[in-house]
Length: 273
Image (tube, rainbow, N blue to C red; front, side, top):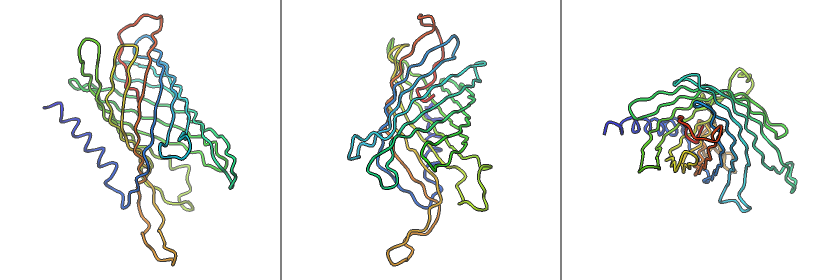
């Protein structure tokens, strides 16, 4: 019973973070996010990562594919509690511009530096991940900006039989633009937190070389919306804070390769690195 308390508290925090502040809330169609990962385990807990990911809109008239991304990553553990690393994400997508019926392919580039702290309380792992990214947008006229993010996650390893290990997990990440890049006097006011990402999952490790993780989450964009008018110019909805929420259903599949070919003892992070 005592192990249920941390999960209940964290779940309550996620619900408050995604719904408490906004005056208005808009829920978009669900997105699918399959991801295939190859993790190369170095000695200790260090690793190299290559990940392929798709963003799919199942309600689209076409094939539904919205983005195709590649993520490269490296993380070094300095001790049992602290680690740091870097990632580089490339996401390609097509856009119809200026009324044209021909789409053009663009790519966003997102380098990141991060540090991670790892606590263990009884059978629970509680981690905090602080990252700084600079998102270089490929679409002409788009504004590239730096962001900082903080992710909190809580999980527990639950052995089932001799081989299978389950990892139930909750995670929430808040992301904010770095404000020194904005001229507050001339540009629109922004929310304190710009993006939120709540995620619940159950990782399933079938062996030391393969595991997969089905998960469900909400991506939330926090904005100040303009007033909405009808055809006669009357205000039908006042300007104010608004949350744009997108439910996401994902499946991560991970293959782990070991340096030297032989398996060795190591701590492995969830598939949401």
